Image (cartoon, rainbow, N blue to C red):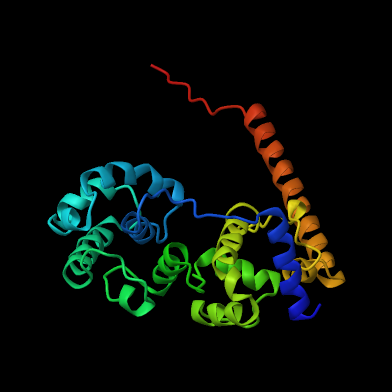
Length: 257
């Protein structure tokens, strides 16, 4: 399948079945979204949504967060991944947000990346979600799924993935495509064992095509046979061990006074 046809199939499916996807992070303002996205690095949205209500209640504004300390912020976010670093990043981000941007979350990618904890991915999320800019954030889900579907080719870095997606996707769909790829990767095209049996995209998925070639199927069959043989061998060994334990006469020593 040509790449243009693959992109068309991708867009056609999700436009029909998931036309208005949104982030699963809970927030009520650009500032809250920025905090949540910083916290979400290498952590689940579910976990972030559990801890942000108390965090936002204590720090409802950039000023209140900037006036705090990493030690205090840590007490609210200690259950997320890398809480010490993220606490420092949040306080540092808030200080710059107040001093350089008058407490208004900036729109530009370069300005956003001036703040601690804000890399290109986070900046693209804010730019596309808050300001509807034509940007696409590449996290682990986007990186993995776009490669498996064949939307990218030999993209070894998130930036290379971003550039290829921006080249072929319509600008007006970049923001929603980000959510399409994330949600598909989170619930169906998971990292270790993708759920190809329920995936609606297998008709144009490059990964599925590769995994179902004659060679791949033969290899899979051999692995299953080997696994079955090993299981049978283990069961026999366990049965033999149990039999020996049952029929072994314990050693006894007669003690003569």
